[in-house]
Image (tube, one colour):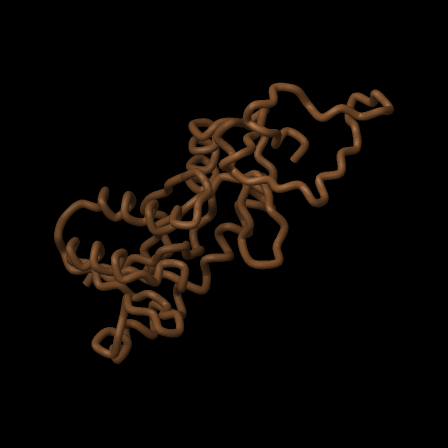
Length: 205
C-alpha cells in the first residue's frame, strides 16, 4: 500500500527517521484509483471485496467450469472494477464453441438484466442467484429442478480459489503486471487437482 501514491507524485512518502521502510499513516487520506496508482505495479487496482473489508491492490481471477465433472473450461484475469466479473463472464462465454443449449450458474454478483440478456443471445440459460428485486431470472427459470441443482453446484466456488491461495501460492503473487499475473493464474488453475467447481458453472443439455 505504500506504493499507492498520487499519480502526479513520483517519489515515495518521506519519513522523518530516514528508514528504508518507513512507517506511513494513511488515515484520513482520500485514496482512489482515479487519483492514485501503484508505483511498483501500475496495473494493480485498489479494491475491496465487500463493505467493511479492507481495500487491497489486486487483480481479479475468473474461472469457468462445467458442473458435471468439475473440469475447468476457461480462465480470465482482469483489472479490478465493480463490473469486472460480468465483463469477464461475457468474454469467456464468447469463446465457447457451438450453439448447443447450455445453462450457466453464478452468484448474485452476476444478477443484472443486461448480462442475462447477453447469455440468452448465446443460447445460454442464466441460472443466476437472484438478488431481492433482481431481474435476471424469474419463475420461468427458477421453477425448474436444474436451477436448484445449479445453485447447489455454484457454492463450491470457494474450493478452487481456496486451493489457489493456500496451495497454489496465489494469496500473494510473486510477479507484477497483468500479463504475468494472467500466466500465473492460468498455470495454477491448470495444475489444480480435479474435483472442484468454479465461479461460473456450465452445463450442456
